[in-house]
Image (spheres, rainbow over the protein chains, first blue to last red):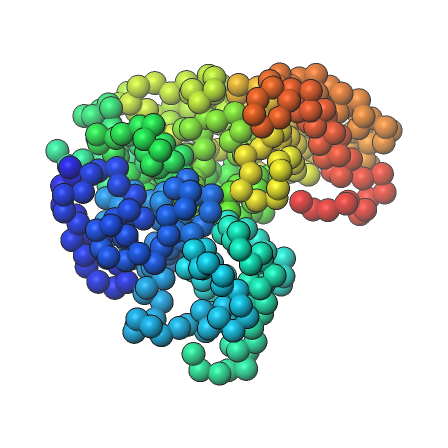
Length: 162
Length: 291
């Protein structure tokens, strides 16, 4: 067991007690903090389905030692919108463009696309492909995802409020 | 004692390591956490490096560029850093995915000492030195002397990597790598080429073709004579083929689940020849690509 520690997740201080020292942030989010949005796929940083932001950086939560993330700002897919059930423009674009099939990769892709658009508001297709190169989807293929990114960019360019 | 320490200074880090020699060092986590998640290793205590001030940052000191051990691959790619370390930036671009590049660090790449570590051939090619700190003080080692075998370093017990020093770029640099796709790939074989036109030196580093990143001294010496340094091109464009042969001869690959020794030897020769060709195009300005 590790000493109790506190994590800042989606703007809230959350206590983690009775955890094993080696637990990943992914495990702690899902199993201890009731935040199952980040998905556990490969647990080795290959699939991107556990993508979260830590101090603004897009990372795989499975490769973050939870007890080492004390003092960092952690944002999960649940924290993208203040109200649960609301969609961000990127999430809405995924729905509109049919970029979701089984949905397992979707939270990670949504996090990756938000990270991209925060940095590059109007990315080229090559930039989009590189930005999602660490997110595996085995259902739709990536064509629908690329279309969703285009749609989200178009919505932002048109200035439609999120 | 706390089971995860987050020292903020190098002195605290070295002291913590001396206090608990079995503590695992955690940089970006991209290697350590894979092992922990898979159950290959179970840490009893961890020293996380991310808050240690002295490990952060990239700066120019005279003729050298100093890269802190905590510098992520993503940071190496940043527009204010990449021009200082062109081949390192190219190598960093080939690592994993954006998620991996935002977490993994050059110090972690050195500490893990995988034969496929993407920054390691660059360090060898550039003639970089690796800065270390330990209970007996600071020292530095030539990059080529840091790697003792597959995933083994020459670090003394209690030592940590604090950074690397490379000469400022003074000529063409390249990193080339083959793998099964363009992202999320561990190198099947890789080549770094670092040309210093001021000192008239050609550095070569090879990855995934030996237990450690390898230099190619005969290929380097040959290239120095093949280059018309005043004109900035090769005396004979055909010299790239001989350069490739000498690089292939310097490799020491094995067959494994990722590729065969024969393919790897061939691949490093081809990549090296192309890197030299693009560094010294027959007609200047016709480089195939900057990458």
